Amino acid sequence: MQVEPIINERKSGIHRVNATFISFFHVGAVAALFFPSWQGIVAAVFLYWLAGSLGIGMGYHRLLTHRGFKTPKWLEYILTVCGMLALQDGAINWVATHRIHHQHTEVPGVDPHTPREGKWWSHAGWILTGTAQQHSESVLRRYAPDLYKDRVHVFLNRFYYMPLVILGLILLFAFGWSVFLWGVFFRVTLALHATWLVNSATHLWGSRRFATDDDSRNNWWVALLTFGEGWHNNHHAYPAAARHGLAWYEIDLNWWGIRLLQLLGLAKSIKLAPLNAISAPQQFVPTATKSE
Image 1 (tube, helix red, strand yellow):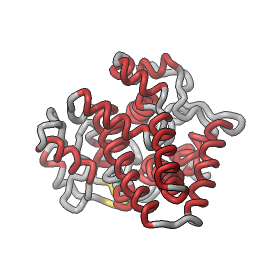
Image 2 (cartoon, rainbow, N blue to C red):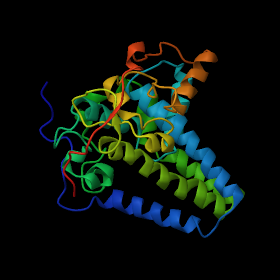
Image 3 (tube, one colour):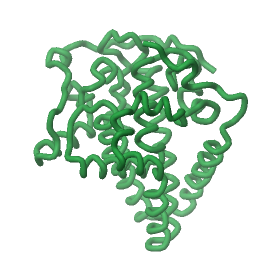
């Protein structure tokens, strides 16, 4: 299949808009440490789960990108809005980027964030000095045509930052600076790094259950940070499967959330890896990627 000549091009300088916002949020995250409060920490933990598990893990990733299960449209939109609270771009841009990653995994200049182009590149360099998720409309239409046909998703994608802006104003004026800094800046910054670790760490360190053609690994501590997204080798072996943690000890809170939706009658057509995949042994392998 012919691909775009350059999907994720390295820039000669820093992506100023991305760098400005990322720096601003990191400063805000540090500032939160000087305004500690139980209310702020509780808000951060709850919103971290709401945006990271319901939004990114279950919504953006397993539902919208891979269509590992189906939900009513109203619930699909709610999960999408939850994902928007993570400030990781709109669902269309996010989905297109991740589908490119799976279709061209580890291909230099095409895979948006392969560690084969450097550890830092795979973590945040692709956001700061690369095309990031700002693809051309033709690329977005090519890799996310299902979402582009949905007017609601197109609208949400265009104003992906608005839910966080509204939430931030509510937290600030209703609960004060501490809850605002923890619930917005600290939580978003931590979640950004957690998601980036799926791009970097789970292609560098961990074990492999399946002999995939890429460098994907299962990494338990990334799985804990991302509610189950760290079982990345399992995921690359069976991308459409809604369950990533295959063994009993592979904690996958995102799968538990999908299972709960199923029990409530809100999730159906759930795709799973074959039963014999669970018994496949895992092996640790050395890191064989270029570093920066």
